Length: 159
Image (cartoon, rainbow, N blue to C red; front, side, top):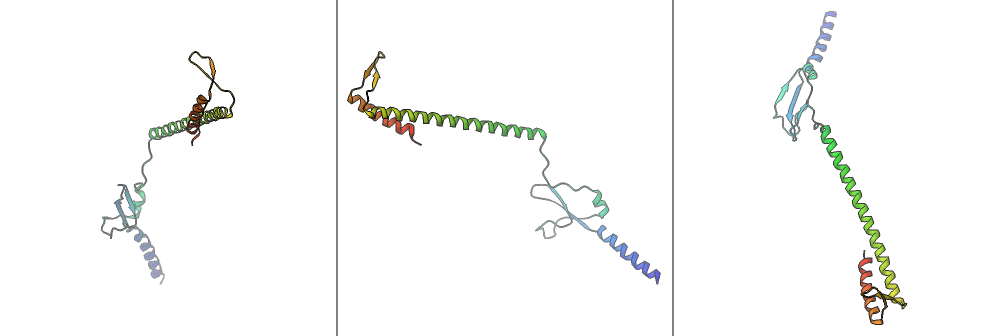
């Protein structure tokens, strides 16, 4: 009776060892052309792809092909890093240029508003003539200057 029990145990152990050894391995190329090795068939294939039967021991010794894209070379990474740095420098320079232009526009607006206010206040305003001498504005010259300055304020102070 002990012989039968030992035989049964040996049979169970043998089957347990042999079953995984006869497992099937599926191998196919995915959409990106990478080789995929799996214990399950390709999704949606209907079982029509090539199936390879490999003992588990051999399968464990074989290194499966990676399905991730290979890393970029250090030179490519360095090039991309330098490109990003250059883009950041250019963006910072543009932001600074925009800030300075906005400050200049605000200053020009303030000057135009102050000059218009002086013209409209009725205080005496003089203009230089061709020789550089200051000549007081008459009423018609003042009115023309006010109209011109209003247009200047609209252009300098608009959004």
